[in-house]
Image (cartoon, rainbow, N blue to C red; front, side, top):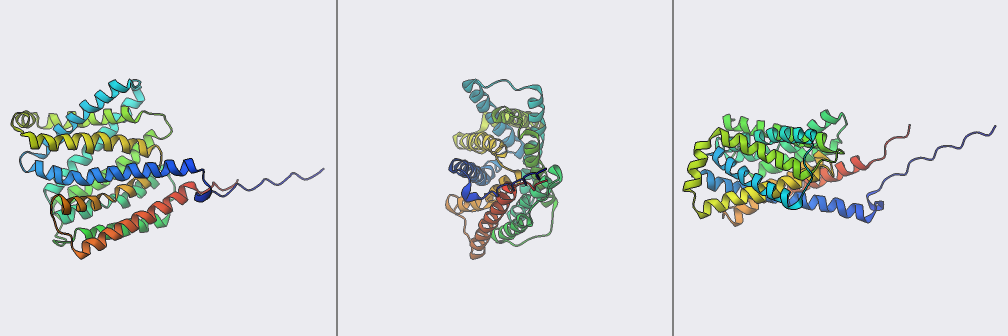
Length: 320
């Protein structure tokens, strides 16, 4: 009886041998995520200008009321299907985590220095691979952690103009925001990937939850702001609601369904760079030599992390 033929070994995937269309699609996802990072980087200057006149909760309420109305209009124009029950539940859960991230982050920034806030919130680059590893019970490449450390060191240099002060309540709130944001990104990946959920439906549900939470927290302040805002303040709120929320959240939810949470987090880790660039140009702030070095380290860490995460995700499964 002849012996059975040996099973051929699975082909080794190579980034250069992938179909051109697949590589173009991956680069397109990365590009859109970078645009989200730019929008969020610019949100600091816009939010800082608005919070000088009204409270944090009022700004967040108006921002997400505008976001919800815009998303509802988009939903009606595109005639998207109605959200199923499970899809709606997922949207509500993600909306609560997103609301927690923004309220912790915004109040934390108001209670600490820009140096501490920029350093602590960037730790999400390190936290997300950890939460993803726990959630999916997979091993994250060591290079991803090294890349995260490099990026955090870069942020330290980038925002080291005033030095690192002793931790305050604001520091702890920003740290909590970084932890919750990493959990939120991982939850989006775990709850939506492979289930065919509509990114628009999920984003609309999340935005509606945030609008309800923030408005109920200070509805009197919201009513006062509506009657007292001038044209410039409304422009700032519209920018936060449309560019930093509608565009950003739609792209983030869609992109996480196309790639991994760690890759999304690494690309989002470039947010401090765009915040500094916008601050030095529009806000006319100064950038020291250490800041330039920090920006270079963030770019290096992001690139190394992306390369390592891509190779790990596309590696062939071991043969049985």
